[in-house]
Length: 163
Image (cartoon, rainbow, N blue to C red; front, side, top):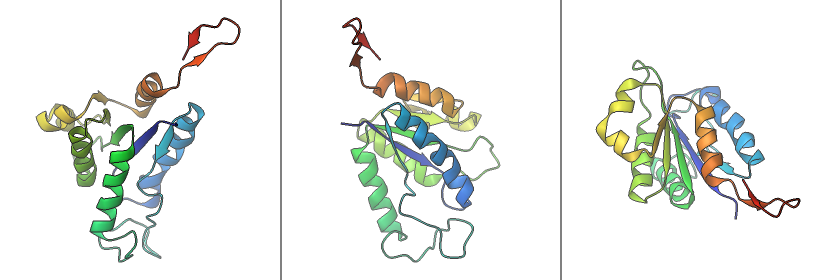
């Protein structure tokens, strides 16, 4: 079975690019290592004509608060790992939904990676208690995910194990 990583991070108020670009780059990188990245935006487009994801998107299937939180909780329950990317600057509004997802993952005993350079978030006692790893960038997060989740295979030429 393919290991999965839920990719939590800012959505509300973000542009399409801000919300999707890092996920769109990370998903193929993870797939190359045999790991599936799960985007919370896979079925949540911005409102027609909008350039940002807004809190009041009226889509009854995927845009209501209950629909969004139910789908995201479903994803957190099913994933093997949670990666949370939070803003680096104190001037950027934090992703409240991502903080909830981090707490859900902790309650479900899922391993988590928090990626941020924001010192306040890095030192926050509750956020820190929920994060298994606190890292500076996505490259370091990929190294941890690959190290923990990559499937072990037998090397045909030696019969030994490899990662």
